[in-house]
Length: 263
Image (cartoon, helix red, strand yellow):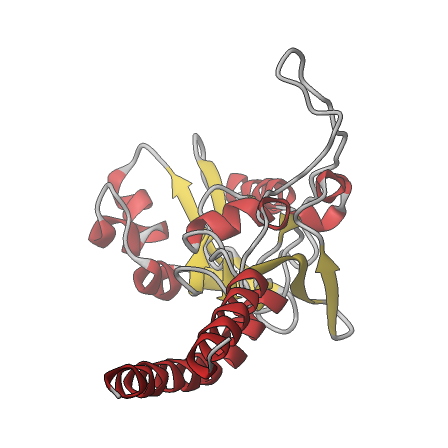
């Protein structure tokens, strides 16, 4: 075998090895895998949705409805400026009630109302009871406007996102971020969550249907989801300079082969 033939044989073999090692299998890309799933009948997976409890620094949007226009304007001065469709996050934040370190919000006429560690429904009932002391035919609506999550790493649109429907699953969070790239590690997704005593971190396997049994299947305000790059992506990154080198060597090999054949 000529030197040029040996060179191209070795070059082809190494290129093939690099290409194979950079491939991603289907099993690494599919979410919620379970052999018991069927197209003939639904598979029930029991889960309990967590009830979020209000924490200091949360921002609440409190609306006090009343048929009297002046009364309504007094309790909801910002709602008229935002219009029927509401406003963006900045306006909602500025017009909302921030929960202070004591766990209270300061509502005109009502004064300090303690809402810390209450659910949205409980906070609504507490404020409604206070309003009923002063007004008739009024109804209270409380919404959490500071439900923000962050999705980082190997996703198509990393960033932070506001949630307006009261709950958000891990899969919905990935949907907001445009889903993972094909090089995201679906078996070790980090969920970082703030707690009363600090921060907790847990690894989630999104390829397993057991995720839907976990209490971490539902995101909470201020959660951070971080998608690590897969080993395939790391290898691809490492092979980039090697690929450039091989391209240069291949070009030189072609030139050498042409020179040898011309002799």
